[in-house]
Image 1 (cartoon, rainbow, N blue to C red):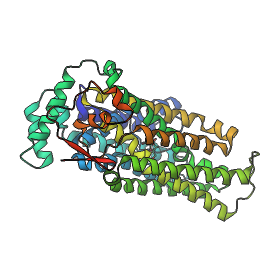
Image 2 (image 1 turned 90 degrees about the vertical axis):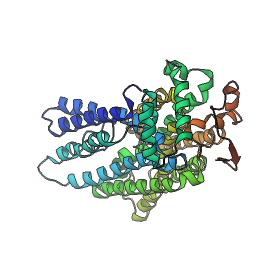
Image 3 (image 1 turned 120 degrees about the vertical axis):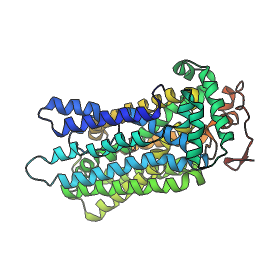
Image 4 (image 1 turned 135 degrees about the horizontal axis):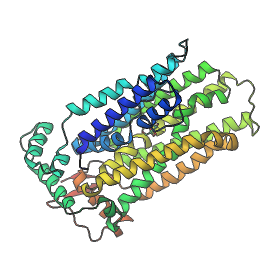
Length: 428
Ligand SMILES: OC[C@H]1O[C@](O)(CO)[C@@H](O)[C@@H]1O
């Protein structure tokens, strides 16, 4: 909050570079450990190039994107963040596939040290990017913010938006304790979403596939090469489906994608559980897996990944970044990222044990959570597409459940009127 979004990103980029260097040149195990502490959140995958970004960047980039974007395209632009993650994962899978074939035992140095490339892009990029007007106003540079807003929007008359931003910032300046505020009654919906959304995102079980696809495919009877190849395939589907959500998020809305994606994931989880259950039972030796059978499993895992990649994947970052009012935004976003990382870590840690004990039931375990989260979205998440961030209070005020927490909250100063049309709002 004090440093602004730009410096936060720079700080993260530098740490990330340091981690990649220490890892790539590691001479001892402790160097690998230190490098990884600097670097990534998935602590148990030693030899894997994973273009993941440290916590600081996760906290600042989605906010940066949502604050910068014109609200009609906010969804699409924000999803650029998740798209980069999926492209990173795909690149990592492809490169690891290649590096694994290098003889002489130094392929892993390329895998780990190669993270310098994205790390440098982040570091240099953060120096070139402009600071957001919101963040400038927050730190008292009003005129600079106005000029910047004109430049970003490409028009001279930015008064309406500028005044909105200033009003929001003034309201936030009066408040000194974003963390304590987060606990206030009127922020109950925000607090709930800051915890529930990242929790549910990880409880879809996506990282079981993302981190362990090769292990999983091998376990169910694929050869080594095919298993690595399948990881490349799921990585590709992940990228393509994320692009679908960029296309649709501001048209079809967040709720539609969440609910459709949830149903799709659930169906696939049940089918995969049945496929694996029928073949393995609970004993665990599949023998030879017929080719058509393997293809069916990979196909349904791909459909599951697609369901995730146009719903919880991108929306898990987008929705929190657009619902928090400025006065709690940084704190709430940090909470969101922390919960996400804690459960990413937890799922990665318990996956092996769960697979051994639950067998095919692992997919049903995550399937159960997918049911819960889909019902949760249906009842508790209001549609946020096409609403300026500064006007977002409207969606809570008109929500059947959350309105009870918002009774003493006013519409923002000089608020434009928003009319509800179907499942979303538009300016009148
Ligand atoms: O695309 C899959 C990736 O998306 C995330 O859920 C959120 O960014 C990651 O935890 C996961 O590895």
